[in-house]
Image 1 (spheres, helix red, strand yellow):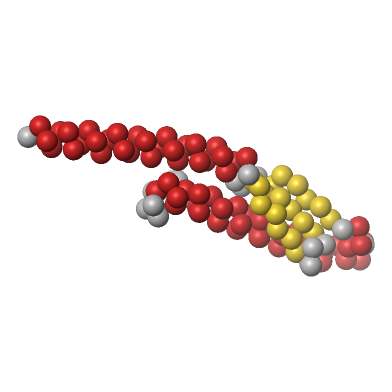
Image 2 (tube, rainbow, N blue to C red):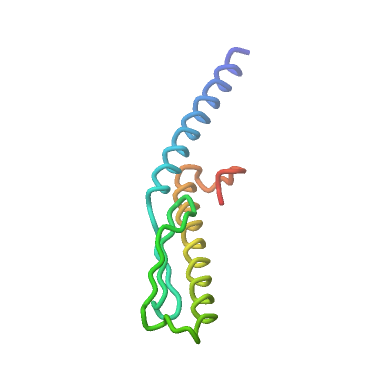
Length: 108
């Protein structure tokens, strides 16, 4: 019977180690950024691993009052692509720790 408790103790220790490593990875990816663009690079954005938009750069050539809707569409497309890339980056880093195991609340 003590082997059962020993096995459970090992399991809990491994779970704690994984939890600690996941927290570390979340902190690390929070400092990393991905870049995305739209309109052939006319609008560029950076998004960090915490899914926060950290910068937007717009080519002055697309800043025309009559092109306002196109510019809004380009910004939206670039931000959405940046968020997708950030989710992908975080997912890849987390799966390195979990071995591909999906842990609810940990993967975007």
